[in-house]
Image (tube, rainbow, N blue to C red; front, top):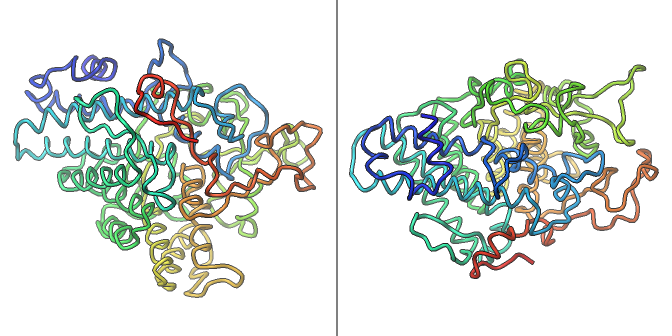
Length: 492
């Protein structure tokens, strides 16, 4: 299996593996599909070098969350993750270059399998399931690319999106499709995946419900509230999943593959623990010797959660106390570690990151309901989440709190519930809201340690209230693509 999947991953698939090998046995087909999953978590050589930082999931969460208002940078660094904090992007930064490269490698693997299997009609449930999984993975990879490298659909769907690659015979030089065209392909692939998959291999693999969860999220990003709510309801009513409770939620992320709430995760084993330098957790948590631990939960997020010490979601925000009971500071910034990517099998650097879970489906539906003006339904869905996180039952009880809007209530709950899971910046900008990053941290240009005073509000940093129309909310197309593909235009 290792030899087979390695061949698929490391060499151009259409050249290295014949159709006959892919389709001759179910075992061979399974190994080929598993090779595509492995690319989400493997450290893959890029530009002739191997780097511990080169891992799809590590880059995805850093590119999204480190540009948000949920995680603060506690020191300057030469690591390219700093470009996300500072929003000072470059076409040559290695993290976006690797993410672009590995994303299209996943897509190419999926295309290879899809083309091989579809040459022969089959009613075999296992083979249809595996084919559906490839459609799902191709949709997910395209979706994550378009979120990071193109304007939100709700802002300008006719703007340049990404390069759609749906065939191994696509020319190397190809223009960017529009955002609308990219989303149409993502929806088509996810619908095909939903149709094909009916023999789930477990939450570490795609399933019919995973495709429906993806469709709910994609439709929400398209502002198609009817379909966003409908697909969320399909997952909720499937009977396959249940919300974790105030008792079990604190163990959810350490036991993702067996948790009742997980719809789809990328499963890591103890042999795939990348330790203190290469893991997702390495930058946001440390037990003193398990990682850099240089990025923390922001005061902005903690302020939103304040007043509810009973909320079990605090369990994933871990204060580092000093000898006198205060909070340790790094360069003047309070140390609140993040543990959503820690403690699988007791390891501080191991987890199986959850890509879709049931709580999001309730929140997707709540946001869609809010936008359609169904106040009671939206608040009821928000209350379901809060009741399972140790908070007062029926806190909202169909009434919008004074001084806020219904959409604000839902988005605030999304922020708390889905914190550090790679969704915050997209939730803000697709709703055409500004992101307020006016708080102390090394995302502020020119900040020096002597400037930091947590009792004061930073001044002179006007560019830290990020408007949804700001060019900095998306990344440049990597230089490799621009130089090798004359038809690909660059972002402004």
